[in-house]
View (cartoon, rainbow, N blue to C red):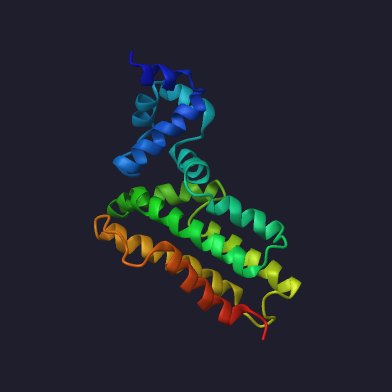
Length: 207
């Protein structure tokens, strides 16, 4: 056994499962990643896998939550407590995390769109776990409502539309560059985020 394999097997089983799922999701896609493949990659039995997770959908949700840029945790924290850093700084951090999150998650989930039955079953399972693609959208709108209640956002601002615009722009950016076989965007991430946040603030900030 190699040193790398020995080190991997020394990790807790749950972490090995998430490591294996993360690797497989990135290399062969969500549609082809089965619990059997994950267990084989993690060096454990399928029975051991089900001791830690209810199924592939829960593993997928945990990989998104734990191993990708922390978009959902950040949004949940801000929705509960916007803090004192200000709207512009918070939106900038959200946009940065969202752009990186979708850049990594879009290629993982893209393979599902070639398998309609599997896609429906997967998203039904994810929804049962209280997750899904709308989760960050709902959380961002909740954060903007908290800022509106504090007076940092105009009282007549459509926070649902603002949330959709920000996250939609980030996910479209990821889709376009994944579709172009990984071609890097001409516009640096910092410039993209700055322009996006500046545009949103024109519609959100109190007059």
